[in-house]
Amino acid sequence: MRQDRRLIGMGRVMIYALAAAVFVTLGLSFAGALHPLGDSLAVFRLPLAGLAALLCALIWLSGLRRAALAGLALLALAEVPVIQSYLRAGAGHDFTLYQKNLYARPADRQAQIADIAAVAPDFLTLQETVPSNRHVLASLKEQLPTQLDCAEPGQSGVALASRFPAIPGSAICAQRLAALQLNTPKGAVWLVSMHLHWPWPHEQAEQLAGLLPVLRGLEGPVIVAGDFNMVPWSHTVRQVARATGGKRAGPVRGSYDLFHFMPIAIDHVLAPGGGVNWLRGKLGSDHRGLVAHVAL
Image 1 (cartoon, rainbow, N blue to C red):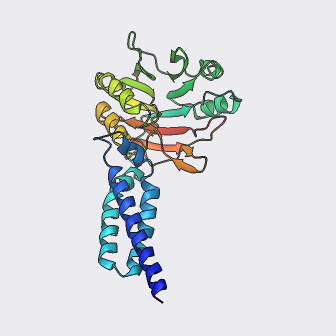
Image 2: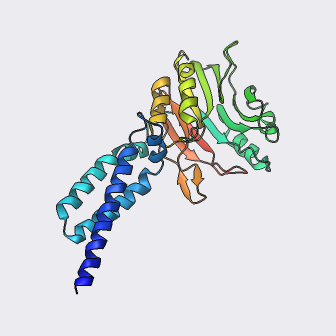
């Protein structure tokens, strides 16, 4: 009998300790402004919340009902930014944009070319452009005649294209970013294609620190799209939104399968008036495409 009580007591201690660790980790996922580790943990905020809710239920059953209720209240507050990210950020439709990380490995690209052509976007943003997939951009030259491909030696590049003409002298290539100002029926609009590195312990924060002055220096409306390698409720995405005056096109769409089974939203489109997006197929890539109707 005593041994059973001892085992039950040990089980409760383990649950309490695990709950404390999960809530601390969840709290650290909000610390991206203080250290890039926070954004890395933000990627796992939803599964952490699920685990925390389960542990609160076990704490309730153990008899500590006030502690369980307090934990659930904190959990509800913690998930507000996530819930907000799942809401649509706007419903205007000035332009259609097709966003795609092509994936640097060789693959058959004909289905991808056909899908872009079928969507007939005003803007196209691409990442991981390499010699084996640059024919995708070339194949769309007639439909999207204005093109900018920013290739870096020894690395995959970023590219963009549009059916609207470019404003001469506006092209920018910098640290896996391509930007071009276009003369559209709505006036001059900047189009940006961006590919951020993986987060901490990789160099995403350092890369973004170098790109933010470039983004802030773009005068006029800015539409930025790309593979951010970061979830929408992160400090990283908020920084890009603030620098460009953009709102993320929603709702949240799982464009990449982390660990091959966990869909996460790391491809984003931001525009001054927000927008609405839809997923397309992978079509030879490890990322799903994203089509967005965006507003200025």
